[in-house]
Amino acid sequence: MSLSPLLSPILVLTLLLMAATGALFYFRFAGRPESNWPLLYYACAAAYLIRFEDVICSDYFCLGLGIALLLRFEFLGRIPFRLLRAAEASFLLWILWCCYRVVLWF
Image (cartoon, rainbow, N blue to C red):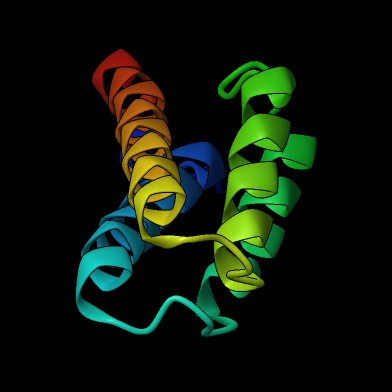
């Protein structure tokens, strides 16, 4: 018995990644920046990246991870913090766009 195309693993995992990305996008502006939840998100997104290589560019992913680490260990002033948070927000929107293209493909 084969799975229907609507229940393929890449589609289900992509939808889960989209939901987690949306939650992180909201959390970055509503929550505390020193939380460990964004690092858990990036660990799960890295596992997704390893499994499905063609969806997300690994160079941009590493850039987003670096920004998240800078935000997590917040040794920055107020203005660099806001710039990095805006850069991570644009990165998260890019992740959503990449995942949306996968969903449209199905």
